[in-house]
Length: 438
Image 1 (cartoon, helix red, strand yellow):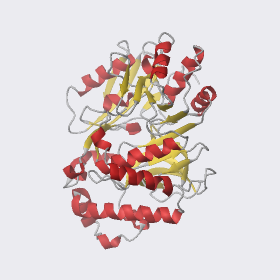
Image 2 (tube, one colour):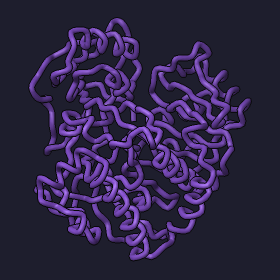
Image 3 (cartoon, one colour):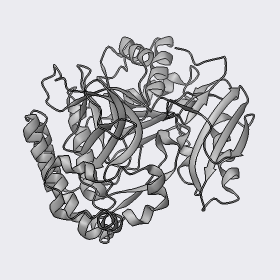
Image 4 (cartoon, helix red, strand yellow):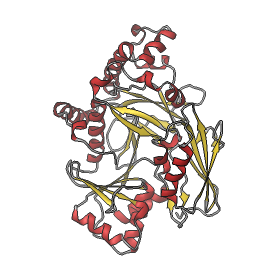
């Protein structure tokens, strides 16, 4: 859970406006939603033409004037932006008036395995907050109700948990919860009267299993939301069977340019007010209904660090269906690309969330992890010009914190990561015969 600071979100007029708008726009006609998107994108285009070095040069190079953009269809005139290009030309995406938007640096690697620093500004924070609030409210959550954030993470807290009173959030690491301490964590849920759980689906599923095995039934949540990893069918079933409530998945990026949220009826809705989502086939053409393609995302609010037509390297299938929930936000199906295998630790636990180790070290263009035996992990690194001599040592130390000192970490410097499937990238690959329990 990213540290909550009130000043990053406390913009009352904007919060009230976006909460009001989002509660209504989810039922707009598609034509009205597209009109809203075009209004927001027009403002972003004006800003990029005037204030963002990369886009000024890009438009000049391609002979594009502002008058060449008169509708959403003209978005395709802008070349798709790869993460590799963004890494190489990072500072060119900062607006000239960058500081006016109160930017906050955020580190991400995501399932692409490439570490990146992006920036959140005040406008994108407001829309992020109110959009997530809308998603939570689909199940009846009310702002201010305590929530649990549980993930496979290293938690820097002597007590084994964190309580953030500012946002009423309780934070657990699933890595340290087992049958020996489960009653202590159940007591914390009771103490803080937690009603909503969110986090990694593998972490939530494991937590439910341990609680069930211990016979603890009185701490079940009213709402469950998964994020950051794709929720697998067996995970969804195990969570829903024990909690008795539907799992609502969430797909988003720390780049703040795409948000796809699942309703209780199962539909994955694209938040058109948040960003423009294109489903693009590998040949660069738009996917038709029922066709799979890469998610290409254009942010509509982050003026400090705008990203237009950003290739997420995640995949989805385009759908022209309408959801029985009654919301008119468009649907996608079969979200893939976020499904990583897990790693077996030295003490026999299955863990995910290893991206954390790649957030801060500089000089890594891409990384991939491969486990072929119980006490060994191969780490393939594609360096860039900022690679430092101590980067490998820092990575090894951080990974051992998560996986145990007995794990042998083997670093390989390569020109390209070795494992891909049908052009899709996976950050973690497990080739052991022994697989995680389903």
